[in-house]
Image 1: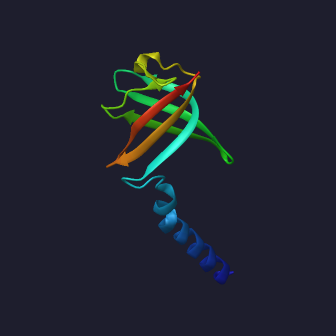
Image 2 (image 1 turned 135 degrees about the vertical axis):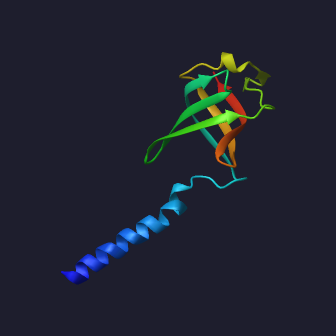
Image 3 (image 1 turned 120 degrees about the horizontal axis):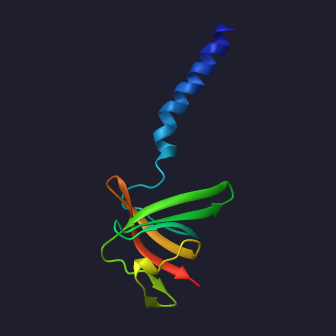
Length: 109
């Protein structure tokens, strides 16, 4: 019984210590590209949220768009206010300090 408790404690301690490794979804400077449905847009804060389907369920990715980013549809620039909730989009993003920053947003018709 004591060995079982000790083993359980070691497993739990290992999980807690390993948590930062698997919880960190993206390292600073790493760039990822995802495609999914736009679930929210806030023009005043330049934020976009996508719901991205994965084999393990939906992943929600929320970013603040870099000031240089101009959303596009069919190759032409559009205003962020023209991005509609429910539309499909491809988002390229990275991590800067403690936040996710959008580097490119392409909306599909």
